[in-house]
Image 1 (cartoon, rainbow, N blue to C red):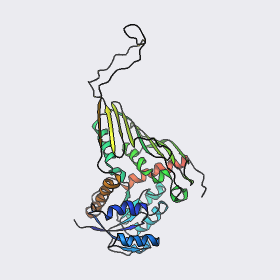
Image 2 (spheres, rainbow, N blue to C red):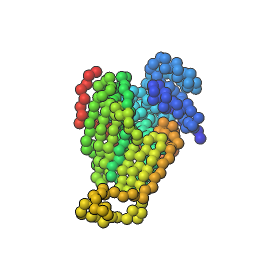
Image 3 (cartoon, rainbow, N blue to C red):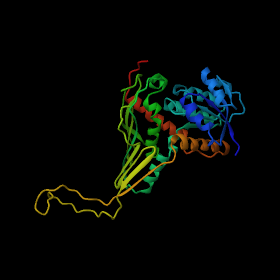
Image 4 (tube, rainbow, N blue to C red):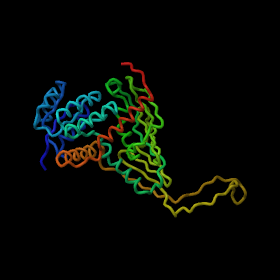
Length: 356
């Protein structure tokens, strides 16, 4: 396999510790890091040591004239995702842009159009779709063991506070722009990215953040003849014990990013009971509660890998084959744009005062 050449813009937490960690690792058999772009002088010095075979530069515009680049990774701050990706596409570069894809659906659609007009590839780093736990949830739903799926809860919660740029509305930041693309993306995935999916209810708030953007969000999504999807992105929940919970007519599946549990019943093992219209009582005539011991099945297991290792590897592998052979990716820019549509709608429904 011949490696392709890659340039990465930005060496912050995502660029250095997520993309960079993969690209520098042994499981990366797809891309050579040919250029690293970083505006901060200290980070450029670090980049020179950890990317010994790359040319480290300070201005991403210097990439426009380079002819030995197969892919540019845009891992810059969120508020520059649109402008920098736009320039790269206009200069006929294949681009992988970090989430959030952009601030608005209009910006997303503009980038998708530019990629098509310039004959280049555009992808969004939504690696949670590749996570083992998400794939397992789809497998369980498709298996039918839970019966008819009634509701799916997605929780990306914790108990912490921030005071950096990720708390500022002007930086296209806050909980649902930063963390939200993952749970909202999974939620839309459970709805099959139905074009009729809608935000039935939403609430945004500021709790522990020092900035002016959200760190609490509740979003309920629906689509015709699909289960209700209940999403939370919260910094004030120290007790959340699952990432996804699937509630069906025959059981429930609960998973974190590391392990899962499933409890369900099997048709035929618990024959249907006749309805008794009167109050229940025991043999001596005493009132009793309507209850029984169901024959249940229980399963549990753990996963090997996460969105940050397996997910990152698999997304980059798909990118490699998209560029080298034209194979379609499983996560499309249109899917990522649908995620931004939800975020944009939630912000419109819950305008927060701008303080910075």
